[in-house]
Length: 109
Image (cartoon, rainbow, N blue to C red):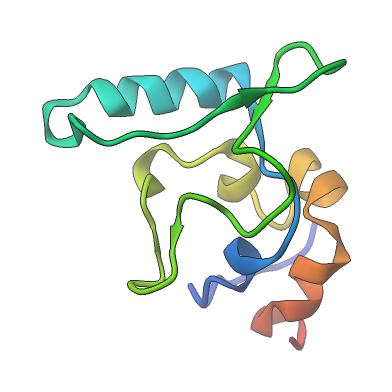
């Protein structure tokens, strides 16, 4: 496991890659959206063909939930496991790709 201290620069969110969500992530985001202070907010989530039980924020791109102006996650409290565990979680390791790690200042980016 990599020692990691997040600098909150957003480089991993800006990196082009798939953002995979587990069923637990999907449920957490749905509960977050149901909270009164989040009424009216939307999150586009797609199912993934040939990967039952997994969802995504869409095609490989910078994260749709990252606000490039404020440099913050729009759904931080409900963010997916892939993001919570970055860079050590199995989904982050497998799918965030080298580009995210290469851009990260914690890893010399």
